[in-house]
Length: 493
Image (cartoon, rainbow, N blue to C red; front, side, top):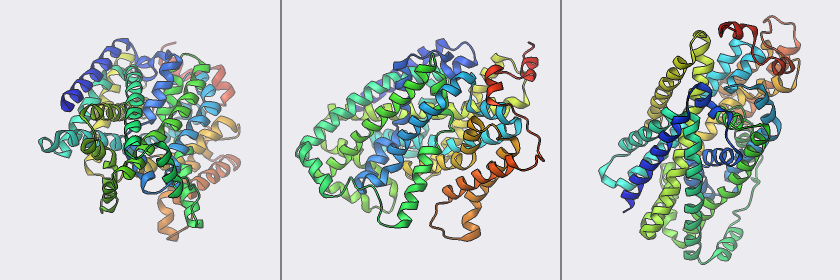
């Protein structure tokens, strides 16, 4: 019955995605759903895309093994990121009428900065996408048993996501996210109630959590504090200059929806992320033998707490609800994770070298890029040994040191220049990657040092005499004239 349900669920998801593809008439439909999503769909895309495999499987297991401080980056930092994006950047991005976040760097700093930041952002998605594909393969492998190897299961899951995303783009993501949000909420809530009962009720679970110091946030050492700072910076700030955040804000039907949809989605994500954490901890109370997973030398094994619990201890109908919710969480995040880098690679890395391309040809190129990026992420998924939580943290550190400072300075500091942006990128990445080799072990995380270096690069480059001419325009000018004269000429206007 369980395998039958999973097959039917996947078929339904593909069907919804293909139905939504009928709305795609041009590249704007494909990338930002024609800027037409109402509030409820906008909230669903934010919630479902962020509540992914790492939240259900990895964050929950990490909390069960440590405490709230161990998951300070996600969900707390991630939800804070969405609130900052909603109230600081949403209105500006929506008014600029851009297709991708890479277009911001193009208009503000010119093509060189556009390509460099877009390349950085696109690379950052490889780990996150691979994490979702790995999780999807793990679920299929768990359900299929000996019939399918883990590698085959990952490939099969990747094919499912690719099929329904390639045709409908953001419209498919929006429609399937709405469907999957309902499944996630209902499925995990039911499992939480059942596990709570088996552990002795909510009061016992809460009492044990307090007794075991599960709500402890701050570490006891200065090194631990700095490590927490690095994690918070990665999740809270590093995720701001990401295409998926931008894409959901600019897919809204108006400015107010862009702000409220992102904010409500962020709050809903933070609140509901406690549900899988509660399930994992309650599972250990009800079934102490699951603690043996923490002793395994492969850190990824702890992510099997919830699947092992449900398959081994619960009736079939509960298994249906749990795996339906889990598949929903993974599929919604995976589709968004594939579409976001596809958009930025095609629009901001490839298109500058083929700027006279017509919209229909661009749409074909978008779908081809989606296939190519999926292949790269699949290779990483098949070879990585990191937990999903670790893969996501590594992902956001890339954009933290290379893309955040040019974004913030470009939006709010009129003196920010092309030269400053270039130095910010070079200094940030250089210190992040090269710092440990230069001065060895350091209590300050390399991503925090990279952020400081990026800020220094922006200040030095923008205040020093200009050796590199500024190619971009001010925010005020961009808002008055969203397209440059060169772009208008390219379109034959």
